[in-house]
Length: 438
Ligand SMILES: [Zn+2]
Image (cartoon, rainbow, N blue to C red; front, side, top):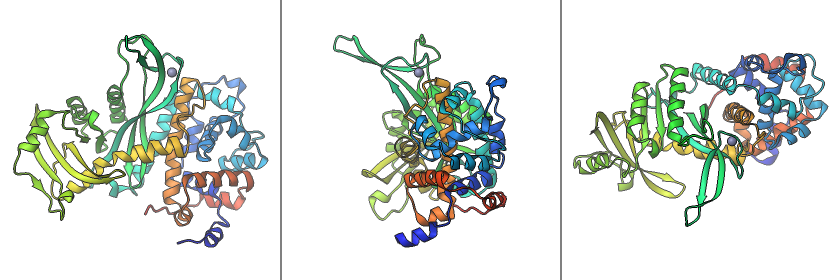
């Protein structure tokens, strides 16, 4: 147990802004250069700020947990902040930080694919580092969780792409329409961390579409892109029971991916009947009934060869039984790992969305009302989140002092506002470092 006094002493000479920049440099050497070279849609004769400064401001806003764009402009309006950002980004002249209107104007024109590409670069760098190899399922497949969530809700039409939900009275008349924006995420699970690898916005092509966009359609679009982006990466798709259907099996099969999908018995009756009918099920020798994991390999479903796994896992609401469908053959050796990997979907809800909504980043708060800027803000949140998770799980000092995400963010803001990065810091930042995730 670290006492408050020990904690104070340990933190005395720490500069979390320096730590963050060092991590950025260590993992993503080319990040700033890439941020500076996104396709710039602005009229080139009116440019005061380079793209990297504009994008970095939002990364800082997110990392420091500043809820609104206005707060960002106010809180960072200090000489120390200007000098720190200038030094951290190695910019020759920076007299003022960009105002939030300038940043939002830029983000409303920037193609979100530019930020998607930057995130892809980051994920590739992480995979190259080979420090997360033990996270692979069966030593082979990278677990990628697919899950959707709501981002913004409006009482009036916001744009032509809004999803609509209509509320009707007893006679069937529409009494209220809610307009929404949702996103589907693909997140890579490595150790305690979940990194966003792709985001597909669930949106209508126009207001007139006869049928609205939905999560499964967004999945097929996302899967297509994911396969193009990460060719030959051995992936296991983990998703909830909505995805336990033939089209998803087919998509995974065509992309040479494995799948591990939550299964609710009414979704495909023939599979659950066969699972229960097979008397000779294989099970592990758990001490108690609840420890037992049961499975049946090779259940035929149309042209598919499906394996079914059932087991109990401790959840926030007590012990719960879960069933999964997979095309990875279940054995005595891998059954427990598969069960926990399947259950890891909760990570994206708890550690992913919940954290990004309620603990840090406030992804439900629209930083701009322009739809393109909204998407870019969202993608910058995912980029920040990768950096922050690496920092929180890899920094020696943060591992020792044990702080909440909120505390880390507020310390970070404090230090940017109060303490200047020294020449020595800058030299140290460039030196190679060792990072371990344990
Ligand atoms: Zn809209």
